Amino acid sequence: QRKTNMMILTTSAESGDGKTYFCTNLASVYAMTGLKTLLIDMDIRKPSIYERLSLLEKDGVTNYIIGEKSLDELILKKDNFKFDILLAGTVPPNPGELIRSEKLKEMFIELRKRYDYIIVDTSPIGLVADVYSLAPLMDTNIFVVRSGKTNKAFFKKLNSQLKNDNVKNVYVVIR
Image 1 (cartoon, rainbow, N blue to C red):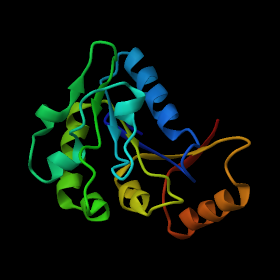
Image 2 (cartoon, rainbow, N blue to C red; image 1 turned 180 degrees about the vertical axis):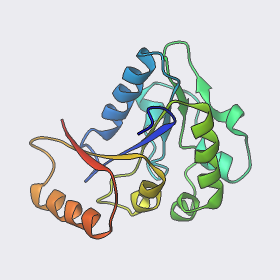
Image 3 (cartoon, helix red, strand yellow; image 1 turned 45 degrees about the vertical axis):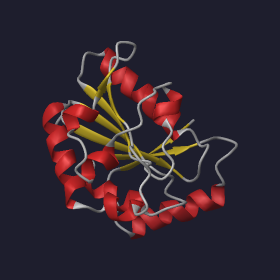
């Protein structure tokens, strides 16, 4: 199994389970080892990485998909982070369409050529179906579960759904 050009998706059952916290820390760990790392905010319905990292920029993935800006214009390289960042961008009226677009697939193919590790923060799988479009494009799909918070019955149902839908390479991280 390859050790570079890896794309890792993270999701959770619902908001507040800690997936964005997990993503930013995972990106930091890979970057500290000297691997070229990109953190992408693919929660285009409710982006939060720009806030979590105290960034003023807002443009990102959606601005690329609709052809407003190039990846080189959108990828942020900040001195205080060892990893690069691609924000979600302007919240669109049609997020589901953008997530399923060919342009998004092309973006991932291009980014895979540029980075050793790409960490993709997505919407909670229990709220919207975006993850089902993205998961097949990834090498690893991580389901973040928060001890004492994530609803066990809901998680069990989602886990069964992932198996039924034949979503591959799903791993659980308990935080």
